[in-house]
Image (cartoon, rainbow, N blue to C red):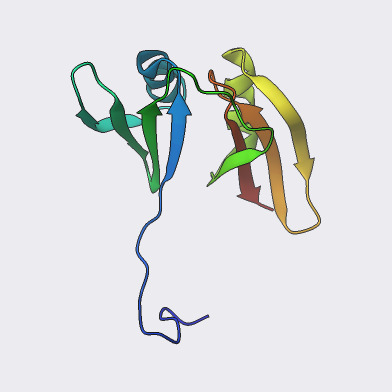
Length: 125
């Protein structure tokens, strides 16, 4: 696959934006449980935050009336999907789809974060 599309534009990083009802609660989960680092916040009170962990980047946006979508809103690749699944379970997150080896070459599971956002997590088999 070429780095450049036929039109010549090269795309850089892309980051999922997750709507959250309580930004501090979401921060505490992603930072305290999953090990992300807050690298930016905006507003007073804070209404937007950027979190990073390795190559993963998540943007949290305060949406007090947020109702979670019934589908996956982000996909994250990790090197130890079993360990992340265990962390999510220990933190009391709802596991939507349990760990499975997929026929497309990933071991994967889906969990809901504290705001009900469904995150699909995978690791190469």
